[in-house]
Length: 56
Image (cartoon, rainbow, N blue to C red; front, side, top):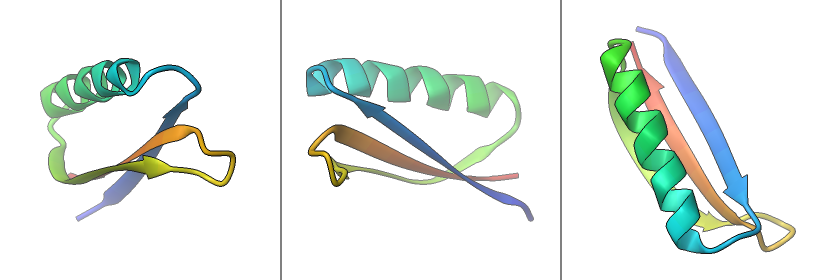
């Protein structure tokens, strides 16, 4: 199995980050990846950040 971690950040509202993450998840699912985890938080610059772990 191969694991991938995707980090996505935004200065904008958390709603825009959620929409980006949903788009990424839908795209990766069509490519045959399995979602292991998704977590939301802040990075060191206090930007809204999502970490997506996938495996294939």
